[in-house]
Image (cartoon, rainbow, N blue to C red; front, side):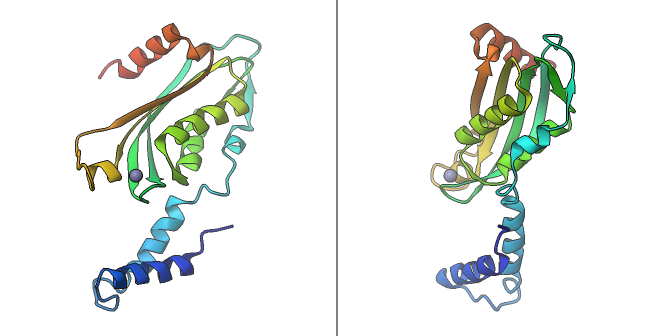
Length: 189
Ligand SMILES: [Zn+2]
C-alpha cells in the first residue's frame, strides 16, 4: 500500500491548527502538501523487500572471496518514537562464501530499510539480516553512525552527539575480525 498523501495532508493541517497557527496564511498554505510529499519519500521502503536487491548475485566459487567493505553509505531515516529524522553513515562488511553482489546493491538495501519508521538498533540488525539472507556469506558486520533529531533538536539538545550501533553474523562476529574491520573503517581519515 502506497502512503496515503491526502490523509497526511489533512493530518498536518490539523497539527498546524492545533499549534494555534493559520493554515491558510501564505507561508503555511502549501505546507500540508509539502509534508505529505516528504513523508511519501521518507516511508517509500515500507512495501519493498530488501532482499530483492540481492537477487542478482555473481558466483565466485567456494571460499574464494576475501572481505568486502563498503564505507560511508549515507542514509536518512525517521525515528519511530518522535517521527524526527536521523541521518548518518553506514559501513557494510561481508565475507563472501560462494557469491558476491554488485556494490551498488548494498546502498539499496540500506535505503529500503531506512525508509520506514525505524529505530537505529533495529535498522542495523535488519540490514545485517538482509545481507545474511540474500548473500549467504561466511560473515556480516554492519556499523551505523547517526545523529538523531530527537537528541539534537529537542529534549537533551546534544547537538554534537552521534550514536554508533553494530550488528554481526557468522565469522565477522568474532572479536579479532570486528577489530580488523573497525580499523579499516577508520583508516585514512
Ligand atoms: Zn526519537
